[in-house]
Image (cartoon, rainbow, N blue to C red):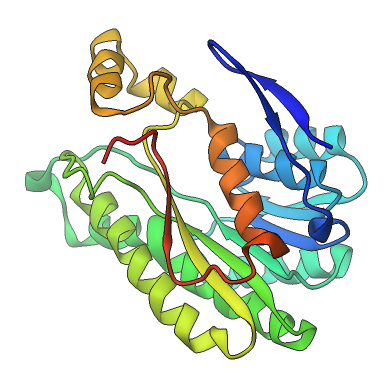
Length: 261
């Protein structure tokens, strides 16, 4: 049985995935934006959802709204030891995860001429490094459980050759390499690893910082579909890839960008 979400010119009915009921899911960057929609989507499927984020007030409010099967830990993902400790705390509350969603990232703009070695390393710690160490932290539990699903969040920014953030775009391009190699290493344990590739998604952050009437008009010309992409549609792809319906899907990219590439 599905539920309904209002679009700009349509009503969309989404489906349910019985295989997700009772599963434990960990999400990074789960308090806002795409991550929040992912947390909500899994909670709506009857999963137990643990998420990490830096925003304590939003994390607390989201967990309180969604109920006892949703927990969170406050964590700076650039600190690998803190990430490992946060996942251990979530596992104590909810059990070992058999689904991991590596969602957290920041697409801050930066001029290539101004980038320092320190800033480059910080951008990679923010947008790439934690994905590997999150996988490393949860994979043993998935192996013990007999399988799992890992979804890494990529970006279509480098596919479309967008400028203005070389450290971000190159880190996101590297996500695809991480997905491919980990799919090979973990596939023997029936752990699937995929990349979801969002286009320009209309989160609060994007609307506040980057969206202009001119930018929206240009984006709609690039896309095959007429509506700007909302975060819920990315969450629905993630939910599908986590479910048993995607049992033979691994090592690939799944685009949610309305045909803009």
